[in-house]
Image (tube, rainbow, N blue to C red):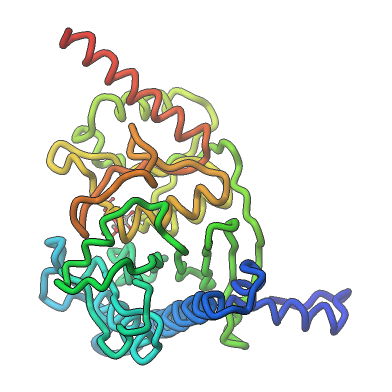
Length: 350
Ligand code: FDP
C-alpha cells in the first residue's frame, strides 16, 4: 500500500507487518498448537494464491497456459489448463505440510489423500481452484474459493463421508480474488477480513478488519440469460427489480468477483435453479457454503430460497444448490417472492 506523506516510519512498519498468519493468531488470541496450525494453514493457502496470481499475470505471454486441456471434469465441464494448474498448486503447497490429510476439489471426483500427512493432519481443505474460469482467457477477474473442515474419524474406507455435514462445520472459509490487485478475504468465525497482496513484499497485508456489509444495496447480480428457464417466482422478483428505480445489474461471470462487489457495496447475487438444472450450478461444499460463511460473518444472509444455506447437509460431495446471497434485506425480499409462490402452489393443491 502507498505510504502517505503523514505516515510515520512506525505506522508504515506496523501496517506492513499486519500479515495474514499473524492476524489468525491475533484472532484466536493464542499461540497453542491448534492456533499455530490454523495460522500455518492460512499461510499455505496464501502461498497457493500467490503462485496462481503470478501465473495469471503472465498468462498472455507464456505458451500453454490458456485454453482447454481437452479433458472433462467430474462436473461434466471442459477443463481449462489454468483449472488444472490451480488444482495442482493447492495439492503441492499442502504436501509435506503435516496439516492436511485430504483435499477435496471441484476438479477431482474423489478427494486427494496425502498419506505422509495423514497421521497428524486433522484438517481437510475443500476448494474451487479457479472459479469463473470462463473469464481466464480474456484477462478478466477470476478467483479461488476455500474452506477448512476438521477431519472426523479416520476415513478408513476413503469415502470422506464425514464431509457430508452442514456449513456450520466449516472452521475457516474464504476466497482469493485475482483482479487488478490480488485480495484474500477470510473468516475463522470471528468476522470477515480483507487482505491485499503487496507484490513488493510478497505478503497479504490487512486492508479491512471486521468488514460489515450494508443491510441493503442496489446491485442485483444474476445471469438474466436464464430468465425463461427460471421458476416464475424468480422471474417475478426480477420483474419487480426492473420496475424499481435505482437498481443496477452487475454480473461478471465469476462468483468471487460478483460476491466481492456485494460484500463491499451491498445487494444480492442469485444463481437459482433452472428447468434443466433445478439445483442450479454452484457446488455447495466448494463454492456456496464457504461464501455463505463469509457473507454471514459480514452481517449478510445466504439461502437456497427456502432454507439457510449453512443448514444444508449435502448428500454427496459434488452436490449443487440454488444460491441467494448478499445483504439481509435484499435476500429476504427474494425469499418473500419464493414463499408467495410456494403458498399459492399449496392453495392450488388443497
Ligand atoms: P465458471 O463455471 O466459469 O467457473 O463456478 C461456476 C461459475 O463460473 C461461477 O463462478 C459463476 O458465477 C457462474 O459459474 C457463471 O455461470 P453462468 O455462465 O451460467 O452464468
